[in-house]
Image (cartoon, rainbow, N blue to C red):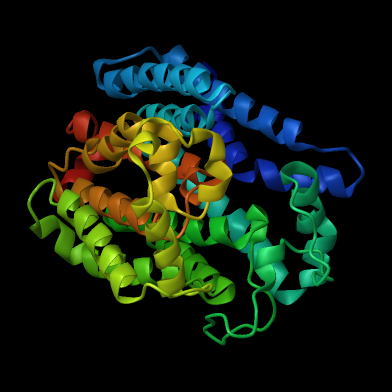
Amino acid sequence: MLNFFGIRPGFLFVPMFAVAYNAILAILNTVGIPVSFAIAALCELLIISGAFFLVARTGFKKVDSTFLISIIAFAVITLYLTILNGKLIIDGLRNFLIIASFALLGMRMSLNEINKVFVWLTWGVLFFLVLEIIDVRLYVAIFEPGNYFAKTRGMEVSEFNDLGLFNNALGFQSRFSFGIFDGPRTSSIFLEQVSLANFATILCLYLLTFYKIIPKKQVLLMMLTVFLIVTSSNTRTTSILVSVLFIGYFVFPLLPRYSNSFAAVSIVIIALLVYFFNPDAVGDNTAGRIRLSMDHFLTLGLSDYFGGSAANLSKLYDSGYAYVIAANTIVGAGIIGYAVLFSIKQRFSFSKRAAFGLTLYVFVNMLIGGTAIYSMKVSSLLWLFVGFVIACENRKGESTNHKTIFKS
């Protein structure tokens, strides 16, 4: 395998392409090269295949077994759902293949490699974010986000969307805003604002976990990028998560192992309380989004827990908990829950921070959306990070580069 100064190009290219492939396809669309949903799906297939190829080239290890066995379980679940519903249901398998392939890839990366992925992506996101803030029309001329999503996702450009952005990036008058930047909500290379906001949270997870061992210039770069993302995309969820993660840097290491599972349960309980005290809440606000999500979750029937509504997943895209059950059955949902809550063993301060951050990211986001956390653009980077943390726990003291990780 090619190796330049301790860097294997494939280990950088695959995750960076996973994050940026939509932006690349959008540029190709802008210059007149046809794109479609099939081409976007093919890119995802190539990305997942590339990740597994790199994993296989390095050889499989005992630590891989949980993810590999889970892939087999999801293949069986997919076959079961397809037979039950009389149509091909691959959402759950596709989602878990992203999780597993990038977690396994992250387990094989060096600190230098994963750090370069995060730094280079941050620079790319920051560059186009600043460009979008300064001149949104130039940004649209480069990417044509509205046109791209119409061709690849079937999301027609709204009649009110005269800029050509992704429809939801336009916002509306009463929507939450920090009031720092005028204009639409920003999207950068992600072309839509939700993935950009999630990218900011993942940067915070990375800083939360490896703050002490990465260069301070890099810390400042990432903090600046997070600040610009939060304030220009006017994201409520990410602004809350960033604040909690900052406090958690000091708190999480003091808590018992696996107490992140109690945090997950607490999030669901709080959401149920919001639902019961605001049963009529509607609209694009916190109470309205949580009510919608919990309403779908609470109205799932017994058959839905075993795949009965898998053919109607489009109705649950804004309902995270209902979606994860309907798309995967209760068995598949349990496997994903285990991966989120327990795949990181939390034996050290840095891994406790990572585990709590991962739990908060997933369980809070599932309050307001069903599919955002499975987007290739951000899920690949998240699970690359998780895999690297898992490997660091397992190779403690193996090399000088990683000894410092365990001092905090």
